Amino acid sequence: MSQYCAVRVIGRVSAVRGILLECKIPSAKVGDLCEVSKADGSLLLAEIVGFTQECTLLSALGPPDGIQVGAPIRPLGVAHRIGVDDSLLGCVLDGFGRPLMGDCLGAFAGPEDRRTTL
Image (tube, rainbow, N blue to C red):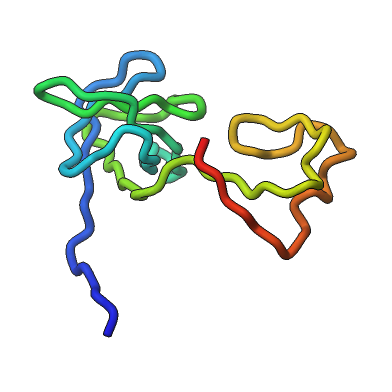
């Protein structure tokens, strides 16, 4: 039988300092990804990068425009991961493992998916 958790952990933004977001998230771990809700309803991906005694520190992985104090934060419980195989040899990727050049766009179509943590 599977185990289910009926409680979803949600944090709230307490301060925004450039791309650094301060919040409180119980049971947070450095390297975990989170989704932050913007004022327009879109989501911003952020990574937990540290802690102080009062708060959890997140680095926004995109422009933090539209993030407000009190905005909800949902921890995803996973770190950055990308699929890796031989078709990536010679490819130039961004920080999310997305190809930056047209020659590598088919590199992610293979059925094999080996994961590595960045």
